[in-house]
Length: 160
Image (cartoon, rainbow, N blue to C red):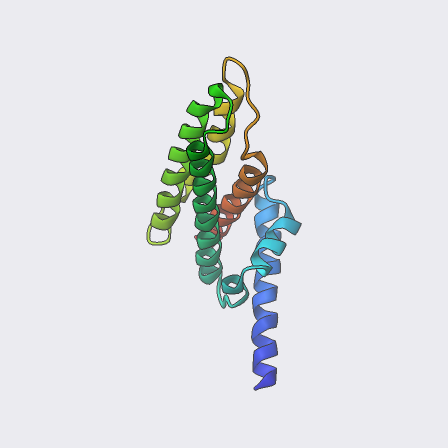
């Protein structure tokens, strides 16, 4: 029994390591260490027995991240503690994260993942292109989200 448990863990770890190596090699935006750390930190990924399982786990992880960013944008807007010129990009980000979450949830049953990929960069652009450029409160999280969605897309491509 112990051997089967250890062997199953080793198989999932090898799957994560191998998949992340291939994903990073196929997409320069994907950082190998980030991919491995993210997937190994996810209980569902650690239990994956196939690449398809890993795709589902990473997609759920990305959907969770977009949901978190949506809540963050909503909280900032409701708190009304932001520069006047930031309201429009904040509202845009809220809408983008809402759409990205829906796309990722849809991607778990079909192919809507690439639509979610634009949300982080479009959100950042909205702050930079103001009459008076603003600092986005989401930059660090958007970088993580971009990586996370890139991993999902790369893993999905490997399934084909």
